[in-house]
Length: 197
Picture 1 (tube, rainbow, N blue to C red):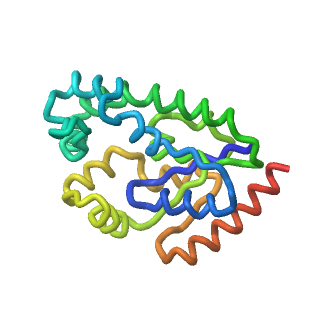
Picture 2 (spheres, rainbow, N blue to C red):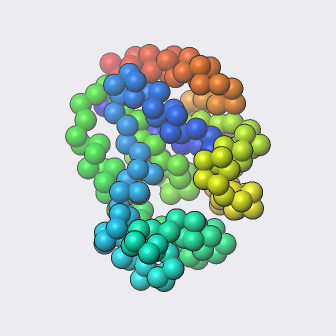
């Protein structure tokens, strides 16, 4: 089975791309979804996060306070490394398990930090979704209600768009509307099917 690694900067549209590929009945493994499932209330990973970062990373109901944690890790690179040490081994273990369960011609493995975690060996091809930085910031503001400073800090911790595109096998331009994106994905779907034969 062909493994296509999907990556891109925050707000570039990885979730939309995954959704459009899933309409072709292509299995999607999403590192962000796995990460969210790992930190549910009472989970071992969430307990490790609380022990590492303090009780203020939890809401009163025991769930993760994501804005507080984001502020802590994106203002301190050492704190970011601590969080990654808790989550990344668990995430990649779950990705490996899921990869064994598919029998489709190809699958999409969405890993936002594919290059940052040096995980290229997990996949056969790298698909980068890209858009201009102004659009990125606007989308993240609308979606996550974060400050521009916080969004810029997140972007600065990711590899540059130029690096991603230089190391991509395939690039999707998500600067326009979903119809234009869907047309690009339809072509890529047929291309990936041809590669998987």
